[in-house]
Image: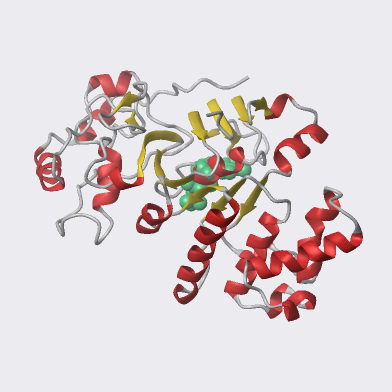
Length: 355
Ligand SMILES: Nc1ncnc2c1ncn2[C@@H]1O[C@H](COP(=O)(O)OP(=O)(O)OP(=O)(O)O)[C@@H](O)[C@H]1O
């Protein structure tokens, strides 16, 4: 099946925010991403803060231009199109839901105006048809019609996020990317918003990319889970294979630190902090914290290897063996020569500067 959206060796490099106008530091936000998302599938993205989840999300919906590599939407190269073509091809077929609806919605516009805006921009239908569509969108996300003339500030957090979801659906997209859609909400309404997203995804046949720190939720929501570390996709697997069947040591460590998912034992100990995205380590970026790392890990990042089950692949020189328990990995990590020995290998700037 043709992928709905696909990335091929896609990099995003930013100028560092610190250091002033002439700063030469670069932030390697996304490095060599290869990913294909099929129509109708839900892909969860997990990883620690700053690993590039939002950058990946923005690249997928055509909001962030990659520094190099390609993004194709239904087989068409998005960034070789003229801007107007791109708006039609990807802008009207994708929607994005952000973390905080309080800042994502224009607080001077009424709910009706917010929902009509994308229809106006993309010249969808007549004035009457646009008004009908706004009513339809409000009912789709469970917002009472009486709120059409309200301002975002008059709504609860949950209602505001429903508006943001309705706006993302306004143009009847095929792909919706939700970047931490519940983390700014009260715990009491989180489940409602997640259930709404799942329900809409089923009813509308959407592909959904779901970015979250909340690993339990990602597993529940997704068909497939992607693990990122320092700008790299390091593992992709069916949602029911993550946790104790993950092959990448980082995925296992990440999940072992999530209460309630694995045996109630101590998490796999990792040494030291995540390195800076301005100076990623050579080879595998996880090697400075990994108990299995050796010289091979410092010299190259391996290609994806296929696990024994379909749709499961990982990039690691020394993957966790199939069936190895977390308890065994904790013991390994505790008794390993400190992974920090590897940190003595000079950290090189190995990632090419995209042209
Ligand atoms: N516009 C920008 N200019 C400079 N650096 C940026 C920019 N956007 C993102 N970054 C940096 O790129 C890296 C990846 O950021 P990104 O927001 O994609 O990570 P994330 O995994 O979504 O983080 P979080 O979970 O905290 O939202 C981080 O080091 C971040 O500081």
